Amino acid sequence: MSKLVAPHGGKGLVCCLLEGAELAAEQKKAAGLKQIEISGRAKGDLIMMGCGGFSPLNGFMKKADWKGVCENFLMADGTFWPVPVTLDVDEDVKVGEEVALVRNGEVYATMKIEEVYEMTEEDKKWECEKVFKGEGEESADDVFWKIALEDHPGVKMVMAQKKFNIAGPVKVLSEGEYPEQYKGVYLRPAETRAAFEEKGWSTVSALQLRNPMHRSHEFLAKISIEVCDGCLIHSLIGNLKPGDIPADVRVKAIDTLVEKYFVKDNVIQAGYPLDMRYAGPREGLLHATFRQNYGVNRMLIGRDHAGVGDFYGLFEAQEIFDKIPYAKEACPEPGKALLCEPMKIDWTFYCYKCDGMASLRTCPHSKEDRVILSGTKLRKALSDGAEVADHFGRDEVLVILRAYYEGLTEKVEVKMQGAASGDAM
Image (cartoon, rainbow, N blue to C red; front, side, top):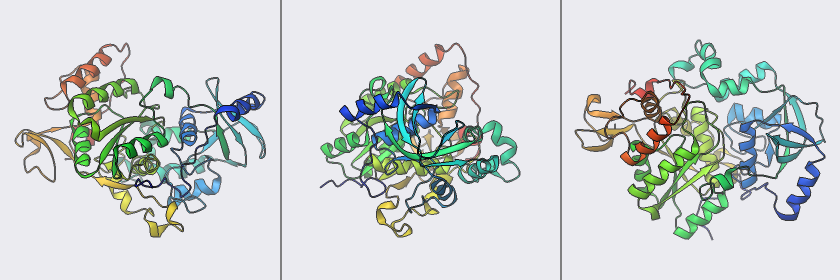
């Protein structure tokens, strides 16, 4: 019997991906169905439903689920879930109709529509306030909407959604480019679980990455390895906002770092196919929720986890775990609660006087003695062709990143925020 944490939701891994004869038959049927063009976000959601990463979801959420998730983190059946997973359309569709869900000419799934519900502008605003509004300086009531539509990519995404949401179970027909483009890195939950069991791991941490690993990321992973059997370095290989470093470059950088600076028996690198939602604390909860499906029971949550701009407090993504109904006693059935717990780490940095990596809990020295590390700060320096501070990243990784930036013909301005600059320390 596996010692790994059970998949979320109490139903085991719920995998909607078809294979073999069943896949061939559904692909043939899909050719005759009405085609609905979906967003990149929905494509990633479908692939996660296909591989079991979004267990126990087997389709897009109905209105009662959407409302419950936004309002109190619970689906209609009492299952914990922190962020809505919905599909927006403007096509004329009806309950009972079967449709093909298509992205750039490829059919990713078929769906039998069980519910169609309108999303008014007020509904979208309500969702944004519940899901994206935090406690940072840019999330004050009188400030949030003044700047969110311009500066918050998650808010802009939701407010641009189409007029209706459709809900119902899906049959996933494709995992897109990920199995080939990221061979050996794109791993399904069943595959990571098998790898953990082969290594004899039962307590597993996960490091969430959307930036290349700098020294702080490396430090977080190594802290977790000291107290867990192993660490899953799990990077996002779906779509990011303009200015972020693409997945193939990040994967190459992580490979180099793991090869040279980790005991390889204690770490696994993998990628998952979602787009970032930029939901700050709520996205931290989502990261823990689907990592549980991958076999992870300790989610590393550091400073400004999944943050964007200054919309969230520096440790709000840690604090939210203490405020939400994720414990066993908070859900009607134990299997429906979140079992993956946070591993909360303070602000980390390189300290010249300590002569090594440290945190606010261990370093007694001043801000002037510290190299403040952040993915945004690193991207800003590389994009501007500026010097990267000593001890910010490993030299072998910086070579890869500089080569990427030197090859760009068009650069996107990288905006600095308080958390990334270290001003808030």
